[in-house]
Image (cartoon, rainbow, N blue to C red; front, side, top):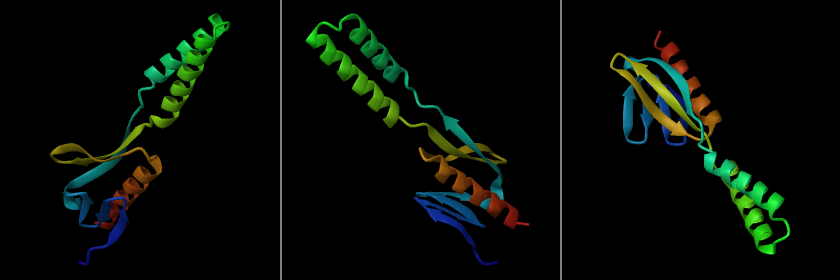
Length: 125
């Protein structure tokens, strides 16, 4: 049987025989299922910066130093909020347990990998 490629993108290759992630290889014959998992980004420091900025600008609005500090804290909080991303994972299940095979901040990429692995599982017949 010829090896059929379902996905070859971003360092991940999925065929009917295996899943290659960098230098790690997972045999498709051992994969029983695949799922998506997510770790939510920790935005507590960004929220703290925004609260600090709001408080500084509200209560110390008459001081130029306080205004400068408040604006700086607001900019930092907004930048952190935007730049910190959720992490998405491809989780492979096999008889030996589960394994986080792929990690990425792009959920669309993770969904494409999961879809291609599901296609490979179905193609086994």
